[in-house]
Length: 321
Image 1 (cartoon, helix red, strand yellow):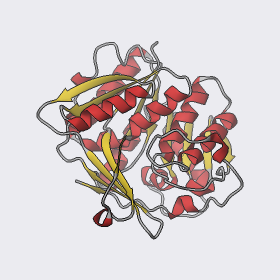
Image 2 (image 1 turned 120 degrees about the vertical axis):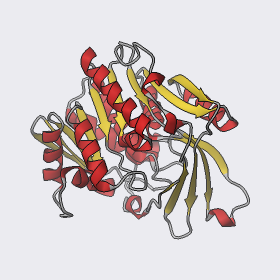
Image 3 (image 1 turned 90 degrees about the horizontal axis):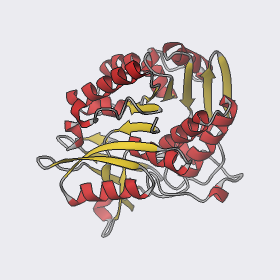
Image 4 (image 1 turned 180 degrees about the vertical axis):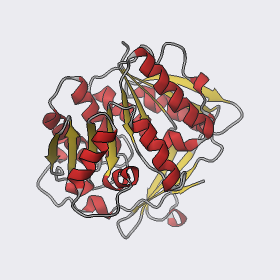
């Protein structure tokens, strides 16, 4: 086995403090859910491979360089006919984080099953996929399902993060996709709103336990529900585990969910009990909020007894084009 395998879209990230219309300069970075998870795993000492389709453009060069520099084994797919996607992130004066994606027709949207070389899935220790890739395009969705079939045939477990993007797929359509993948996964991750979507629950505050158990019942007994500033709850083989959020001062919440997932998976692969995995995941997700960027390395001493409610004040205004 060669380690964890994941694939999906990573974009050039342009960010600044303030509304884009008022900025003279922006910071250049990269970001994408699956590569964020891959970076988190690599930092935890887990061998990990990320397959990324990007354009033959400077943005694609930057994406591949950034991910590889963090210790991830990168399998690049270069597309001369399409451009690398772009993500804009603004830290607005009112405290919100506004994220805008420009990805329609991107190189990653042309992802297809042939982009995953023979043996790559079959020799993996774990396959990690997300709902974002399901929603990118028909061929990207085919790639996810083809990879899951290959994983099942080879006895490779699957991890699934719902990561619902309402600008990419309508709720009802997404629900069907997510349920189908969840039923084939060893563990499923979701925010509480995403868990309600998958399960078809109405908004019911305080029903996190039923969400975790319901999602786990769909997903072969293992589910983790991320609750932001309220922490997280996991249902593992019928046993409920709850964890408070780790207190931090929030700088940028984007990427926190990916750091959470990476830490959980790393702990689980190392044989940690669920309570310890949840502890590590909560700390990693909180620390990711303390730095700018989707995956930049945080200072572990940033964990402290400070107010955590700012995590939920960061509203993501997503425009997927």
